Every structure is written in structure tokens, then in C-alpha cells.
Image (tube, rainbow, N blue to C red; front, side):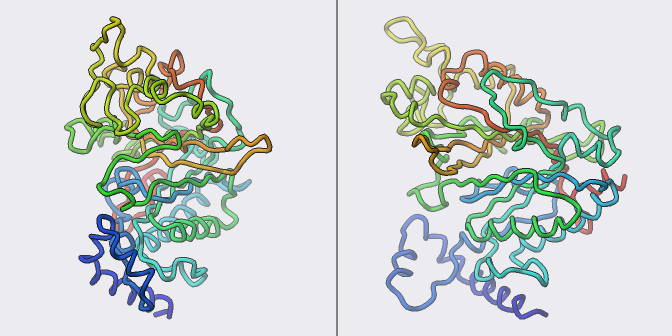
Length: 409
């Protein structure tokens, strides 16, 4: 057994014993205060000890709680690489991801970046782009759901930062754990694949609010209230590909639409609060509809004010994107915010790494985005700068790697 294996496992064992006390960290903040004033090491809190299983019906990173730190990276297979090389790469990546998500080192060449941390809810999710099927001579297995997304009027897409043969989503509640996984995945690609583009994102850290709540985006809006819930009877039908799908290798999988959406924050922040709320259709303070209630209260779309106009304006983002306004079309949004610095003119390069999951993007993302494109009040304040669509296979069983049923079927 390697020395770093021993130290990491001892650490995780200590953290597991401390898990019960760590649960009060977010609510009371006592552990943080103790750590700042004590010379003795503080055991890992529940944030560090939480692990996510790599194997299962679905890949991790889809329905798991949003993590505080994320990386998105797309690869293109190297010239001359085909199905055989892709299978070898996915086998290697899957074994690596399983180790990392369990809190184990990344093999003999581990950099030690995450040596002191627990798994920290790390998830590594793999997907295939449309061009992957050309490169691997598997065009007959390419689902129609991977047809190119239509053009939208708000698109200002940088093709160099869009699409890709392979896509990897990494999320963790610790920044070093997330970076460690990104670096390990990149190094493990070897000569088989080259990075096409890479993006970094973040969310609010778990425990930063007195009670759990939906995250806010960089516009300050509660973002993700309308997501389908796992408790809803049609959740699986909306998010995951059914077992009786045409392409058996996608059973239990999902489709991810990835968009880098620049927020024009200087323009947005000039709007008075009331106008911002009308653009969104929800109160900024708590995410509740303008028609009242709490964040989870359904939109009263028929309610009018004293002036006879809808309380939630006809072009409000929440109204236009609501499933009931789109024939039931829904998608599970699981984004990260991003901030990549300040441009020369003082404009922040910031916004949303939009990631949405659905069983069929032709029935999920596309119809909703088309409707938003025709009259969303939010459109003048955002710009879509990069885009990708990826088929994300179901989770691997023990002894399998991601995509094995496609590449060896």
C-alpha cells in the first residue's frame, strides 16, 4: 500500500468519526470559530466527508446537490484516434473518476493537491458530442437528439469554445478537490485526446446560509426554483432516457445542454429593483412570484392588477419559461456561475455556465429557448457566447466503464 493511500484513508476514517458533530457546522458556525482560535487540527466537517458513488443507474453529477466549485472541459480525440482509442480512454477515465470520487489518490502520479481533503462531494460526469460518433465510426448509434441546436437571436457563439468530441463535468465542495480532479483527467487523456475548451464555475458554499435554499446567480436572483423535483411522478421521464430507447446504450442516460451565458451586469444593475423583478417575474428578496406566496408557490399567471395588466408581465422570464407555458417542456437546471476577470473597458466577464439535463433536448431545451428568444424581457441583459450538446450515458455497473455499451456493443 502506498504511503499517501495510508494517510488519506486514516484521514477519512477520522473524518467519518467526526461526521455527527460536523453536521451543525452550517447552522451554527461554531466549528469555523473554533478553527480560527485553536492551535489543534479541526476534524473534517460533513462537507469534506460526503462521498458520491461512481457506479449506478445514472451518472453522478445530474441529480446530486449543486457543489460550490465546478469545471467544465471538452476534448477532441487526437488525429488518428478512433473507437479503440476512445474505449481505452473511457476505461482509464472511469477508473480514475471512481478513485477520485471515493477520496483515493489519482494513482502513482498523484500531485498531492487534494491529499488532506475528503471526497467533498466530488462528481465526475462524462458525455459524448455529435462529432464523437464520426470519429469512432459509430454514426449509426448517434441519437437524433444530438442534432445541432438551432440558431437563436441572442447567440454570439465562439465556435472554439463550443461543442467537442468528449465532455467532462467536474463538481466538488472544495476548490482544491475540484482542481485536482480536473488536472488528473487532463493528464490521463495522454495522447488520445486534446483539450478543446475549459471553463471554471462556482456556487454558494453549503452552510453559507442559515437554512438550505436555492442558489442565487450573479444578478442576485434566486435561480432554479422551477426545476422538476425527484419527488414528482414524471421526474424520471423528463430527465432520463427510458430503458426502452432506440439506442440501448443511452438507457438511464440524459442529454446535457451547456451554454456560457454572459450577463451584462452593468446594464442590469442600473435597473431599479422593481423593474428587475418585473423582468424576472419574481421577488428578488425570496424568489417568490410577484403574485405572492413563497419561492415554491406556483405562478398565478392569470392574476391581473388594478390596471388590468398581468401582475407577472407577459414577457417576464418566469412566465415564458414555465412548463405550463411550454406544453409541459421541462429541464433540470444545474448551473455554475463564472467570473473570468474584468475587460479593458471595465466590464465584468461574468455570468452563468448554464447546464440543463433532459431526456430529450428537442422537447426540453429547444422549445423553451425558442420561446424565450422571441420575447423574453431578460434577453437584452444576457448574451450566449458558447454552446454544446452532449449525450451522457447511464451510469456504469461495477466492472464497467462509462460508454462501454456503446463502444463495445
